[in-house]
Each structure stands twice: as structure tokens, then as C-alpha cells.
Length: 325
Image (cartoon, rainbow, N blue to C red):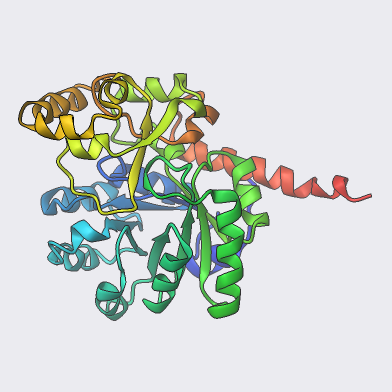
């Protein structure tokens, strides 16, 4: 199998510059371990903070080295979860969607590299101030929560800022990356590797209902939308500027432009939404994937995904000289 050597692979001691995103509820220990065994690095999603679930997923990863990631603003309400995660000696600790600086000292004291996922240049500077070893430049194409920047211009702009202000800090690209083309492009944009969500979400090891997987396989990139409706239905008070990219389904169509009406009916609608999600209903609750769904035609193992991405990226990079006259 081909290998792509970057500063990331050297720094983390991994074979391939691919990390799986710590997706809330979907990114459990089995998925994280599978990505690591394939030569990348898998991250367990700490999500909104369930101590029992967190321990269960580290146990599911077994002796395989994995990382962990948190939704920063939610974890800040229960900072003991950070201490709990660090006790498992993760390979990396990722924070996203909130100021990482209040938690940087504890992470550094544990000797764990800090990853800060960023959606703007202001976020990048916050991450650098927090002493992040790795910055993730996340484009709005990503599934799940994000903001407004697009991956293609954001990654090189973040690369330039980091090169000027903190050249030892590594950079990952995220948002819309699902195959070797995206990996090769990210490296050319100045990233040291990639953080991949939707493609690993559509893997056999992910904690995702099969009906949701089927919806993603059938979708195109046109079939997603950014919205605040799923967070209203789940009664999650997400701070601005973040919203969530999901499938543009019947739930979205029903409540589009009616945020206030959904809030007014939340006593009944929250229960209906939760039941639909647990049942895997692809129409009556959010299906959380990004524009990269248009590049997904199957639900293989995570290891196969890593292998495909690396082989394709290596072939593309190796043949790039054909463009030189």
C-alpha cells in the first residue's frame, strides 16, 4: 500500500495523514480504532457529554491508540469530562465550537497534543494562542456543525496565517473531503493532512442507523442544507455563528422558515423528533451528513476507506507532473 509522508504522519507516528472526525454519537470507539489500525488516527466523539458513554467507547477501542474530541461550549458545562477523557491517555484531544483557551493548561499538563477545529481566522488565532499543536480549517461543506467559510479558500488562507505566526503548528483540512482527490487537493492547499467526517460516518463501524446510511448513499451534494431546525428540535442551545448541515428532507421542508413555530410546539415535537431519530426515520428527523455524500456510493469498512483514499491520492500526486509542459 502507498504511503503519504507529511509533517502530520511524522509528528503523530502514523502511516497516513488521515484523521476521523470525533462525530457526536456516530464516532465511537470501534470506528476510531478501525481508522487507527488502518494507519490513520481515529477520534472518539465526546459529543454533548455522557460520562458513561465516553468510558464505553474508550473500552470499545481496546488497546488501540485513539484520540477524543469535544464540543467545547457543551463540555465547558461539565469540565470533569475533559479530565475523564485525559485519564484514558488519548493520542490527541480536539476541541471545537468554542474558546479552547480555558482548557489548554490541563491538556498541556497531561502531555496530550491539542487540536483546535476552526471555522474562521479568528478561531485559528484563538487556537494558536491556546498552544494548539494542530489546527483544523473546517469548511462549511462539512456535515454536522460548522459556519460559513468554504474549504477551498479557507485552508490556504489558514496555512498562510500559520506559516507567518506559528510555523511549527500543523494544519488539517476538513469539509467535503471523502476520497483521494480531496486528500491530494488538501495537501496541495498547504494542509499536512485531513480530518474526515461524512465518509467515515458512512462506514460499517460508525454508530449510524442503516436507514440513514441508505439516505446518504442515495443523496447528492445538492441534497443537503444548513439549518438551525435540528438543534431546536433537540433543544440544544447552539451559539452563533454555528448551525448544522443535514439532509434536506421532509422534516426540514415542514419547518423551513418556521423556527418560532417549532419552538412553540417543542413540548410535543421534541419527543416526536427523538423517536423518529432513534428509529432511523430518514424523513422525520435530521440525517447528519455533508456535501461529500455525493461522493459516497457504498458503506465499506473504515479500513477500506483509508486504503482507497491513500491509493487514489498517491496516484494523483505521482501523476501530477503530466500538467507540466
